[in-house]
Length: 250
Ligand code: PEP
Figure: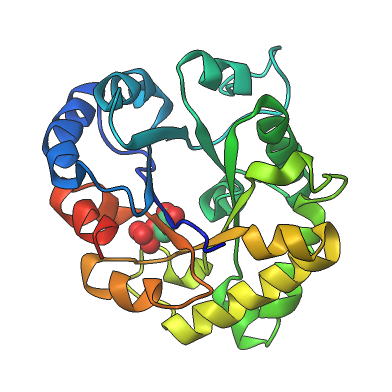
């Protein structure tokens, strides 16, 4: 069965609730009736309620940008899967490179967050990807394999049913440098091979692997034409309704 592509917006630390409502007011008419791909918008936590309300009864789902592994507790600044579910949020990003780079996220905490999301029935978008020095040292495949092995540690194929992986080469995020479709497809193939080892062939062949890193309306169709690329995780270009709609409709 062909894999349905997923196009996800990662708004990072941008937009207020009012700006979120304005985005949806302009964006939804541009993608109404678009069923070919799954569309998800991941705003900051403070915008989730506004986003869910604005996207109600539309073809756009709403996701969080992170999730803690405990259900509640003394963890200042964190939010749990049940808090996301209570807002009717359905997706969540885990292991984004900015969390890894600036907030001490490790392969092990990514794994804990991933398991919590799966356990709660959320669809996790688990980010992996190499930094420039690792690519230049020829370590890309090793890094991707390590990140997958650690993130998926002790997760069964049954539990992982909703898992989505995003390959995001760190050197391409927010830099305007995009991986060529061929280079991205090679990395995706490494991830799919690792998923085959861990979860088995049937699971891996239906696993969606998104590409992220300076995706724009101008390069989206070449990237999406690669059989190995099952969608996109989009940062900067997802903040503008027209530009994100242009990517969705590649
Ligand atoms: C991201 O934040 O996941 C991302 C891919 O950002 P950008 O599209 O801006 O490179």
